Amino acid sequence: MSPAAGRVLVAGVGNIFLGDDAFGPEVIRALDRRPLPPEATVRDFGIRGMDLAYTLLDGCATAVLVDAAPRGHRPGTLTLVEADPPDGTAVPEAHGMDPAKVLALAAQLGDEPLPRVLVLACEPGVLPRGDEDIAPGLSVPVREAVDRAVDALHTLVPVLLADPAAPAPALGRPVESGTPHPAALPGHVPAGAEDR
Image 1: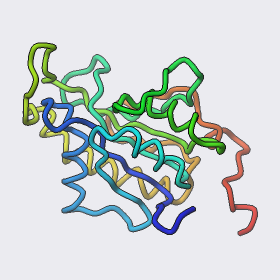
Image 2 (image 1 turned 90 degrees about the vertical axis):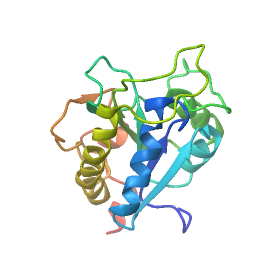
Image 3 (image 1 turned 30 degrees about the horizontal axis):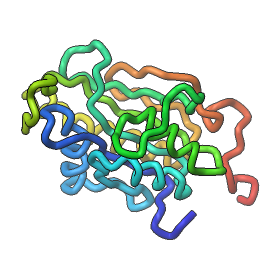
Image 4 (image 1 turned 180 degrees about the vertical axis):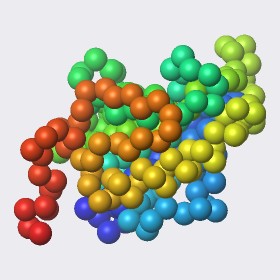
């Protein structure tokens, strides 16, 4: 692990000019006022998918992507999702921020397994349509979800710092899972644990 890499990466993703897609960057800004423990690396990646892909390969045990993602809930609903490891079906993309494509790119770039990836998703209410280029500002329900997301991260990150394979704690909102990351499976010994 590089000296700059934290054990948990909290990554805000999204475009600040596309309405509720700015949720991830807004949560990272709110964390400036309520910082997470110093063992966590907190960064706003915006729409820089290549930067995020390389950072995922920099030695963190777990990454939490904070993003707006339509999942069929009411706008402002927070959902914690365990991301499926890349299975070869998502086409890697260097110029974009689709999380599945960024994970596929990171898997293609690196020789080591990717870290466990969780997504703290917020149901958007306002996203620009195809003919709209810019829609700055969050909708009211998504703006109200920013502080709840900060609270959720203050619950989640200490648990992940203590044990990267720990089941995600209940955050008072829906918690959904994809296929568990190998680190979350029973019997997994975290790297370095045998040296303790």
